[in-house]
Image (cartoon, rainbow, N blue to C red; front, top):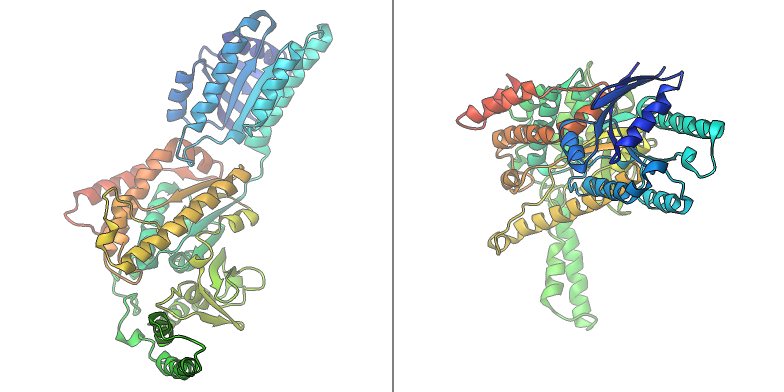
Length: 545
């Protein structure tokens, strides 16, 4: 029988005594009452309640304990009607307390809140119920035994019915609710994004007792996230990935560093022919005065000669060699876990999930190549007669698709975030390319923040946690998306930053992970973070030894 902890908040002490009296006469519930807590034991659930009578007590308890549910008793008892305004004021203060948490992921979900109401004054209680409905809480349960005119057996039956409804609410959200799937959403961010995501995954892997990050049900990857996710879904241990990508073990023949051989020389003749044709047309338009000579027209003509700078066919071959083995696979359909790679149809400007129905015959290596085709560095990849490029153009993350496919526990890792500075003129000191990159990151993250807030509001059953680089760390990640620098600083700081975030969320995330059979154990992570802090320089070897 599962045992859950709930918070019971009642500004009026007598309401709890009244509730316990009603529970005590139920032959299907056992009441174990104490001074500051009590337990209700049923056939399918044991619910232990921590009692709070002031907002200060609520705030203190919620900072230290994860509660599977919160029960607020705002019933106006007949002998204490003068306390009704005080009770309703405390109720408003309670919801204001929950609403003032600016960190969405630390905010307590209103779907787990039930409020008990009741009053002989039907108009007053109707108004209260209406206000509660605007809060989108889990349940508003009306004690009809407090209605004027109910006596004797009718009164007892009405109060018994309240307990049945309350127990049904607790059972539905704590016992009967089917467990959904677990999903990773790995966003883009260039090569430094790969480093960051590996550091976060390593920290989560160390913190999750009884579960490996390779054992999630689904992986959604875009750009850098497609690269990392394809390995995770294929069963590669995160330690091996860190050693391989960082070239620590010197065993992988492929390097992420671009060299002269990666220049897209085959594109030059085609671009020169296009430039020649357009120049002839442009001269003809000038002679016939269909177009005026201008700097803009000259630049437009010259731009035709500037095609994608590099070819990353070598990346596709390297991934194919890694996946086309006995232990792994380059076929979406043969993976032990679901993998979805987000790409952009370059002409339709639509987001497509390779690996989804109708797109699962694409080789994984080719899908990752397409998702990492960042313009203007790499050319779009032809697949089934369409051209696909960087998935981040049309989507920062695929939370919507994750939920649609049954996920109710989602971890988002998003390294593609801008560097923030309070210094006036900070950005103007940098190159236009640097500023453009920061602008794109700002657009992408703003899009993600607004979208995710609304999606999760519409899907309150979903628990979603996002990991992004600290602003201090973003300074390490402002170089070109193709730069291979700062491997050790980025990956070690990603590990330490994820640990700090987990400590902030521990009281809440631990309970939600437990519902999925995952235990959060931060002691081994803390030991590694301490060892990193003692090291004279950032060293990823500390994470994998």
